[in-house]
Every structure is written in C-alpha cells, then in structure tokens.
Amino acid sequence: MGLDWLGIDHLYCSALPTGGGTIRAAHGVLSIPVPAVLKLWEMRGTPIYSNGIDQELVTPTGAAIATTLATDFGSPPAMTLQRIGLGAGSRDLPIPNILRLWLGESSKAELPTQSPLETISVLETQIDDSSPQVIAYVFEALFAAGAVDVFTQSIGMKKSRPGILLTVICHPQQLSSCETVLFRETSTLGIRRFTQQRAILQREIQQVETKYGAVRVKIAWMGQRVITNVQPEYEDCAELARQHHVPWREVHRLALHTWYTHKTILCGISTRVLSQLKDHATL
Image (cartoon, rainbow, N blue to C red; front, side, top):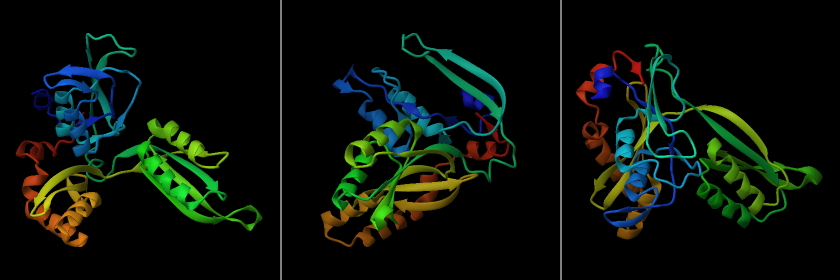
C-alpha cells in the first residue's frame, strides 16, 4: 500500500544481514537464518553478510517482501534524494535498530540504459611451489568462503619457474574470509588487494518443471526488464542427467524450451508495474 501511495516504480534494497543463533518456532528450535529465509535468498540470489549479531535480523515475512518487490540488491542507484523515512524497532541491538527508506528520482534517460554498479574486492597472488591438487582444493574453499569467482592464469616467475596467478573476486564483506583461505591453504607470503566497480545485470532464479524434474534457471535482464540471458543451472541439469541416464545437453535443452514456452507467466510483471515504469520514480 505504501509503495502504491508513493507511486514507486523501482525498489532497491541493501544486502541483508544473516543474523545468528537459534529461535523457537512452531516446528521447534531452528537455526537463524531460518529455512524459509534461506530459501527465499537462494531463489532470488540475494547478497547477504554477517554483522556478528546472533539474533533474528530478517524474518520470513521481511525476506518475502524484499525478495518479491526489490528491483535489485546492493548499493543505492544514482538518484536525486527527496525524502527520508525512519522506523525504529523495540529490540536492543549492538547497532542502531533502525530501518531507513530513501525516496528519490532518477533521470528518465538513465534507468533503461545504465546497469547497476556494485563494489567488489579483487585478491591476487602468484604461486610457483604448490601442487595442482592444492589449487583445486583452494577453489572449493574460496567458494565456500563466499567468493563470487576464482580463476588462474599460467605465468612465468623468477628463475624461469612456471607458476600461476590466482585471482579471487568477492564482495568486500567476504574479503577477510577469502584472504584467510589463501594464507591458510597456499604457500603465498603476500596478497594484493584491489577495490573496483563492476556493472551487473539484474537477475533472479526461477524454477521450471521438466519431465525429468525441477531445474533452476537464472534470468538476467537490463533496463525495463529486457531479458538478455537465460541459463539453466548446471548442477541441476547434471543431477537429473545422472538420475535418468540421459545426456546433460538433453536436460539443458528441455529446461530452456520449458522456460521459453512459459516465459510470459514466469516473467511476472504486473500491469501496475508496467504502467509505473513510465515515471521512473526510484526508492
């Protein structure tokens, strides 16, 4: 009701805190974040971080509202700030328990063409004295620590020794944990840090039902929901291919066909949102 009353076209949300500890619910004692919140975050591909507070900081209702209504997550978009709203909670926390809403306007020329920007951290180190098996293990450990991407390049090092340049891309919140993995699991004595901006496409995870089973599909778009990329998740296709003894590419093809057959339903843009896109008001 509030978004309708304010005439909001685009809603942007910051990354969400995981919280910690446990909570008693109808199903018994649950770990925080609770399963419903985790599933919503997974389905939307929501960026999350830990601020060290062991309490429930995002409820299932809050997660449902944010993941359903938010155009994107991350840094605030470029806009002219008009008003600020503050709402304080009653629970005592180590940080101010305040929710802030920023209301602003973005240029009509910017919204359809500009991709959102986010700040990322890049870690680099050269290694010439470790087993390739170690590098394979480090990849797994880095992704478990929250890395967005990890890759290597073959390089020549001092004394003509062949080596690799190991590069890690992560969000600033995961920089420390990824750096710890590199120092713990490799022989490196130093790691270079960079902070960069990257343009990203807006994205979400949808699910399609094929005759072999459910497959998650990653959808990416730009501007006024112009879809630019549709890709079934590799692991889902691989698992179904193994279960049914069929080629991976057959499951992949079927998942794409199913999505494109039902895309008018899966895109899910309401008539109200389409009409509001003309004004480009931004929250």
